[in-house]
Length: 68
Image (tube, rainbow, N blue to C red; front, side):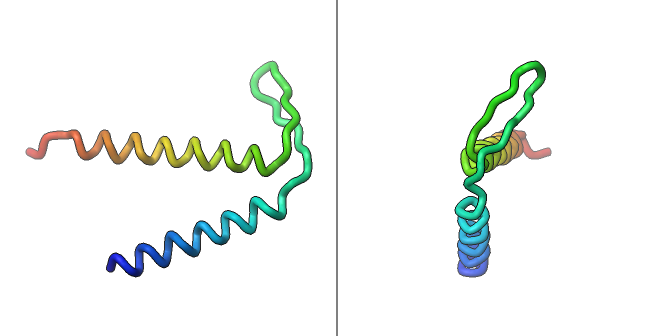
């Protein structure tokens, strides 16, 4: 089961890297009243990082709950 999990993670990382490498054009991002211009690769990495942090926070919150 651990090998299957490792293979799935490796495949997802490879797909993500391909996606990032192919998206290097500059994009405008509107956030409330500000408009930022950045390469799409940066936006994708920021978004992925935020997603990982949210996932870690949820996992930590679930593991801290006492079992009933």
